[in-house]
Image (spheres, rainbow, N blue to C red):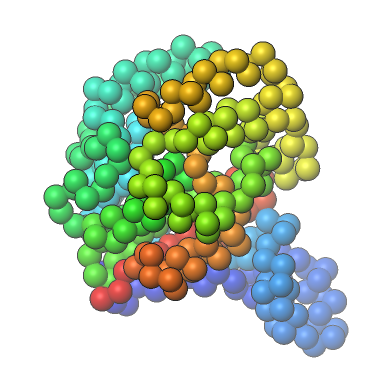
Length: 311
């Protein structure tokens, strides 16, 4: 890993005030601009979703990942964020290439998904490593960095995933993540994940969804339009919107202990994610140290996080 590579700070005062011209003008008259903006960031974070660092988009975040170093993208399905030859990237998933194609063909049967997946089927992805339980320890080599997008929330045992990720990263390397913010996606009505929930799943050595998580994912979710969520239009939970699906969801949940069902196990905001990961690190459940959390930007439903492995 290049020792000279430094991540941008989470908070840049000039960008913070540059996006708030009236506030900047007012603070200049009081001569407290820097003190106030630092206090505001520490106390409130980024409630307006305005840019406050050099990371102003998903593209900005992806550009942080070194292109000349090896990287493993975890869970790309048929839509990788990192592509060859720009990145020296390998791919890991729970499905092999043929299984992915079969799943994508099934998704084309959904009217509003058809065009997207038909296009993906024209360019099938070569999966380098796969394991049906998402076991990263099955990958026989290490990488300078790891990357995942909307993957961490799908891990039945979050701690084991982070432990396995640590073993796949070379000393000094990083794990770059794009994580959904529960406030602005279909997880809106579900509670933030707690430390005791994560510890319980680890003690159970959970490898599949429990029935409660399946019901939560199927019946208590909202719409997935971040613009509407930012406008405080959250709609109604699925069970209220479509009560006819109750029986089917109950039957599906009953099979969860024997059948793998892909759901969101964990729900985060940038603040809750930071608290949880710091506590897991401080209590020595994980060895990757959280280095940055870039907050959710307005009208989007994801934030960005970076973990670092020590030398």
